[in-house]
Amino acid sequence: MNSQARPLPLTADDWGMSPGINAAILEMAQRGLIQQVSILAGSPFVKHGLDELLKVPHLKFGLHFNLTLFPPLFEEQQDAFSPFMDPASFHYKPFWKLRMIWANPLGRSTKIALATDACKGQLEKLRTLKVPVSYMDGHQEVHTLPGLFPAIASELKKWGVLEILVTNPWGKLFSGKFFQARCAFKTARLARNLGFAVRKVYQPSLTQLRRPSRSQNKTFVVRPSVSNDLENYGIRDRYRQGRVMEYEALNQLAQSLN
Image (cartoon, rainbow, N blue to C red):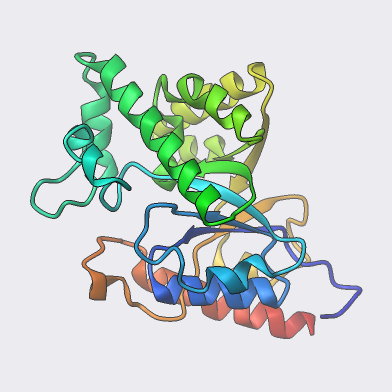
């Protein structure tokens, strides 16, 4: 890589979601483009390429906290987690359904307790995989659901996780996602008050990925995949083709920095 060209600060989401996603993240981490990787601890492909990923120098790892995809980590928890589950597919519910469940004040304390238990289980899974976790974010921003972060804060501190990533709430506000923006603002404020570092991350355009001289002061989150393989595993995802396009853009970026 050209020593005079400083790569964009990139965080990769969704490690473990599919072999194609893992392959893309591993390749770009080995080429020096990705500095952080957020891991879906309970995913069926979490071990796919993980040994090689852990050998990449100076790479940081985070818990990609999840309540919307894949069954619970432990079979005995399935009944307890049923509020978050789709009984037809045994996947967690889509985020919009989860948000409706969460908005219902009835049983809110129980739902928060179950989500906190999920967080503990996912952190424990990463420990068994020997992943040194230094930060956390959320799949579909579930870590910003109202009332959740204060409940999991002590557990995160226990594990030495003192930084959280939050997708730029102003971007959500101007895109009409008022509820998500409000949740992100509130979670960021609560986290800072509880002694956590908070870092805003941004969704890059393909143009921004191809032009590393721009927006160097921002941390971008990327979700590349070498192939559109999510449908092979029955995983619902609206961004399937976008992942492949991101991989191609990152390839161009890597070539430009050589």
